[in-house]
Length: 108
Image (tube, rainbow, N blue to C red; front, side, top):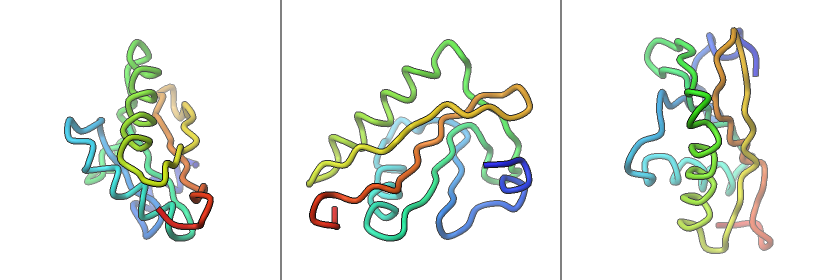
């Protein structure tokens, strides 16, 4: 994902979260929707209103990525596990779950 793509804003298959919400349901529903359709990208570390790249503190980045993976895995039946990668733009690192995967039967 590029700065230009972020500046274009959210779309049908792109959503931004400034930080990881306490209530995982606020993003697991999005992941399930992406997994059941053509996929999508949910980028943590970007303010959705302003599209400002705020990043995730390096000290908690991998813990945040684990929390995302666990929440998605625990919330879905059949289980899905998104690919989650750290992604750096302009010196700020974000968590980028890429939901290309579908469950073995095609639906979650």
